Amino acid sequence: MRMGGAHPAFNAKTIEDLKPLCETLDKHGLSAIMAPKSLSELSDDECAAFGERARELGLVIGEAGFWENIMTADADLQSARIETIRTMLRKADIMGCNCVVTSVGTKGPGDAWNEPHPYMFTEDCKAELRDLVLRILDGLDLKTTKYCLEAWCHSFFYKLDDIKDFIGRVDHPNFAVHLDQMNLVTIESFYQTTDLVNRTFDLLGEHVVSLHMKDIQWDFKHMFLKWDEVLIGDGVLDYATYLQRIAQDLPEDIPCYCEHLRGEDLYAENFKRLHEHAQKSGLQFKQRQ
Image (cartoon, rainbow, N blue to C red; front, side, top):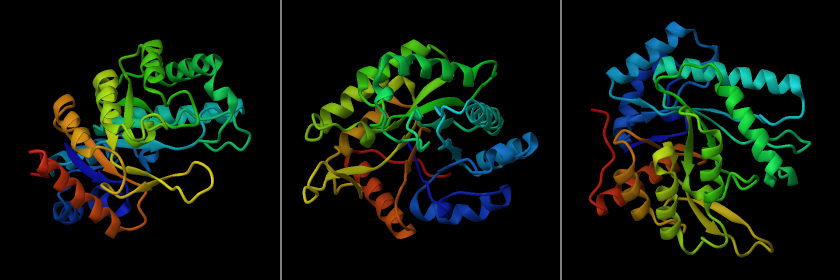
């Protein structure tokens, strides 16, 4: 396992940033970074050089994200977004990055990638999304990089059986899963996260190429259902089981990222807690060297 953080302080914008970044990474026991946000704008030579330098420094480039709505009803806009993702996949492959991640998208009128809409839970949605995934991957000769969807509760791509079924429908060697275990929690599994983690890895483990590390808690003071992201250990996720299954089922260089925290100090606290959880289970995150 390799740890990283989705914050500018723990990532490099340019190849020149990589070497100075290592002091910060080493301080927190990190050895995974994300691809530069400018990935699609980099030349092929720049991508190759960035990836080579990262590997020389003992770093894994785990993921690049595209967080715009890929299911927009605007055909021209959708085509442009698909082309951007295809460009990112090609350049990520040159760089040696594990995956490019997107959401399922939405038919919601506001064009936000996570806007709820009833269509997103239908068989028609599954069929359309399958065609969209295959359209994104069509003709790309990818040797390292996978195209991934990240589960979210605004679509069918949220329940484990539905995700497993969809992987089978797509049936493409370059389609994989980005696992954020917190995103898969439901009312039924909220107090049974050990079972949820084990079932997740039993069903999806072989398809996972990158992970997020977060925790979840129930805000009962809110009148209706409201769940919050919290620091690891302040929620209900069974991190002992989560880390054990990652170490047992996934490649040793699998990247695991903290995200969505307000500042570097909170990231530092999460990193510390993850190291402590790993040590208690007889595990460790791989260091840069």
